[in-house]
Length: 66
Image: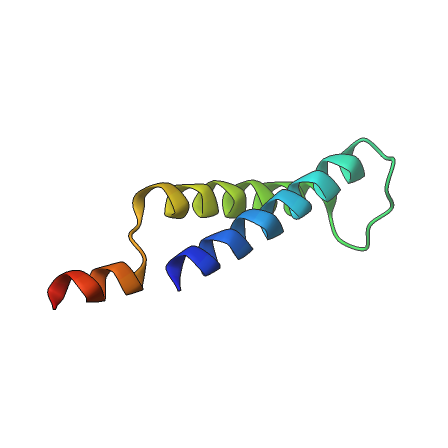
């Protein structure tokens, strides 16, 4: 379950980061502030990557206890 959440955060963060950077440079018109979108995208991307690297999945944790 944690890996699924981490993948969603990574992919969503990457999309938001790209859209934010494109909005900052003016090639995409966004309804939101491009700086806010880029910053949130960066935060979610880094959080998703770190969760993928350092967290064990809940299925693996449950299997080790038994």
